[in-house]
Every structure is written in C-alpha cells, then in structure tokens.
Image (cartoon, rainbow, N blue to C red):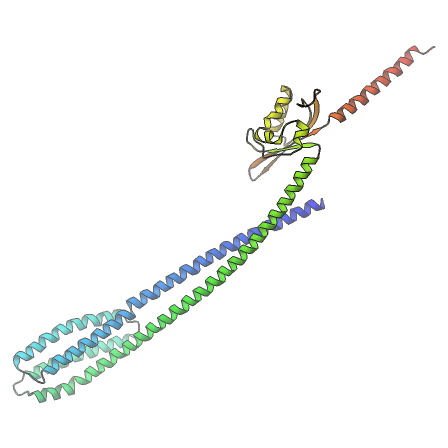
Length: 369
C-alpha cells in the first residue's frame, strides 16, 4: 500500500512538473512573440517618423534656403538694371518664388516636431521679406532711383531680413538634425534591447526544453520499467490477462500466459478476443457477455467450464472482469485463472467424504443387535 501510494505521489509530481514546464514554455513563446512584434512595430514607427518628419523637413529647409537665395539674386539684379521692364521681370520671378516658398513653409509647419514659435518666426520674417521686396520694387521703379541708391536700400532693408530668415531656418534645421540623431540613437537602443531580450528568452526556452526533455526521458524510463515488470509478472503467473476497450474484437493487451491457460496465442487473441467464446458453451457465452455489458455492475466474478484445445477433458477457469472509465474512455480488464486442479481436489475430497459417509451408514445397518 505504501509503495502504491508513493508511486501515485510520484506520478502526480511528474504530471505537475510537466504541466508547469509546458505552461512556462508557452509563456516564453508568447513573450518572444510579443517582444518581436513590439520591436517591429516601434522600429517601423521610427522609420516612418524619420521619413515623414526629419527627412522631409530637412529637405524643405534646404529648398527654402535655395528659394531665398534665388530671391536675393533677383532683387540684386536691380542693382545693375532698373528699367521698368527689368522691374516687371523681377516682380514676376518673385511672385513665382513666393508660391513655392509658401507651399514649403506650410509643409514645414505641419511636419515640424519642434516648438511652434520656430515656424511662426519663419513665417513672420518671410512676410516681412515680401513686404520689403515689394517696397524695393516700387522704389526701383521711381525715375530718380539710381543703381547705387537701390543697392543701399536693399542693404539697409532686405539684407538683415535675409540674415534673420537664414538664422531661423538654421535653428529649425539644427532641431531637425538633433531629432534625427535622437531617433537613430533610439532605434539603435531598441535594436540592442530587442536582441538582448530575444537572447534571454531563447536561452530560457532552451533551458526549459532541456529540462522538459529530461523530465520526459525520466518518465519514459519509469514507464518502461513498469511495463517491463508487468510483462514479466503477467508472463510468469498462472493467469491470463486481457485488456480491451469498446472495439468489438481487438484487444489492447494480452499477456503471454494466455498460451498456457487458454491454449490460444496472444497474437490471435489480440486480433480477435472472441476466440475464447468458441471454447465455451452457449449458455456460458451469454452469461459472460451479459456480465460485461451490464450497466449496473462494473465487476464480474464467476467460474466457467472451458474446452482447452490441448486437453481432452474440460478445464475450469475463474473469470474476473473489471470495468474502468477514465476521461470518458471505457476499458475492460479480464483475468482467467486455471482452477481445474483445485476443483478436482475439491471433487475428490467430496467423493471421499461421501464414500466414508456411505461406509459408516453401511456399518450401522449390518451391525448385530
């Protein structure tokens, strides 16, 4: 009883360890998947952020500075030629540059991630440049405006605004480049962090798999030893074992002792257990089948007459059956033990008692009075 209790306790512990191991591996797998998805999502977000914000704003600032340089070239042309047609050409060129500059400034305003006052200052200076250039064009169109006076006017009123615009654009560009560098650093940290977590999780999974494999092997060795002991025991005892389920003919297991007890090979019985019914009378077969199929009783214990293929006289077998139901799967255990010699001995003893009783009665009948 103590050995059986210990075995049950060991099996419970092994099952619990196996369940914990499988649950832990599943958690690690989901954690690995979560880390991978999180890293991929963040990396994609960083790439999208770089593409839509710093890179775009960086390019727009470069285009804005180029347009500003073109504006400066157009207005400086008036320092050499200030005829009315020259003024009209400069005005037309500036109007086209204004349209492109406004589109670039609007895109910078919507994509810039820095302080809002940076883009506001850029817009204000741009509007001041527009006003100053319009006034320059009007001044250049005056009849008494000479090229020297136009150059002095532009140096006084426009060059400071150009420098201020360059300074504001450079401040935005510095912030954009700093943001871009921070994104690169964050992406690098994210990559290293993901690699570290992946290494830790894979290491834990590997150790868990080794432990799980060790546990499975240990359980396999114990199961093999138990099966081996059971096979040795079932083959040596004078009792046949049969284990079967709801299949109409096949057996899951037939002990090697069935050859001696029943005169039928274990292989043939495993394929068709109903072969034993061919060596019983019809009444016995009906009784056994009814007992096995009973819904009320889960056990059967009876003595039957059996015609052994190797013996001329009938043999007497004690038949016991047990029905189990685990996880909705019914199994039957059938044992057949040869009781022929015991029955013969009991019959001989009974015959001897009857003979002795008859002899004693005879003595009393013929004794002299």
